[in-house]
Amino acid sequence: MRQKLVMFLGLFLTSLPLASIGAFAETHEVQMLNKHPDDKKKRNVFVPAVIKIKPGDTVKFVSGSKGHNTESIKGMIPKGGKPWKSKISRDFEVTFDQPGIYGYRCTPHYTLGMVGIVIVEGDGWDANLGAAKGVKQRGRSKKIFETLWAEVDQIMK
Ligand SMILES: [Cu+2]
Image 1 (cartoon, rainbow, N blue to C red):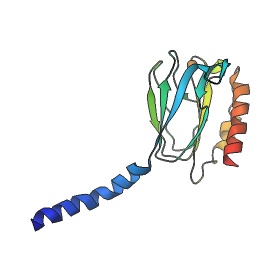
Image 2 (cartoon, protein in one colour; image 1 turned 180 degrees about the horizontal axis):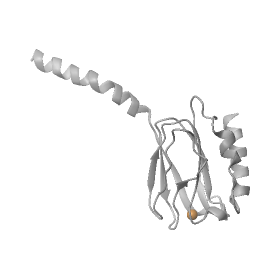
Image 3 (spheres, protein in one colour; image 1 turned 60 degrees about the horizontal axis):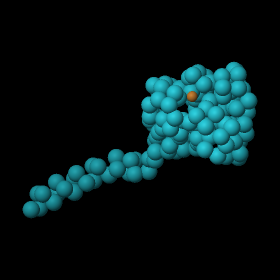
């Protein structure tokens, strides 16, 4: 009896650190859509386009409309961050451990302005902010990123 109790306690205690990490990690959804639900004139959008999360959290990109994907943009992820690229019309999950700014796009609709930003808060989150802002954008993404950066500044001020 006592042996079992000791074993149980041992298992319980060794599983604590893992449980405490998992307990606080969250999954956030970003929809990949043909039309913005609040403004049908906005086509090919990530909703929300700017999202702030904590290290260890996951973003689930949901294929709400067909024909979209998510791909990190070169030069727009922090040092130690991992690039990603999903398949078209598929849900895709990315777990973020490294604080920083992550700019991403939909590969086929990039020049139409289908882009988004994940902010992973924590120490040094803004270390790559200037570099990310400095990345040259093409087509409508130029204009869209300007509005997204204004949102980032608003969220993080
Ligand atoms: Cu798209």
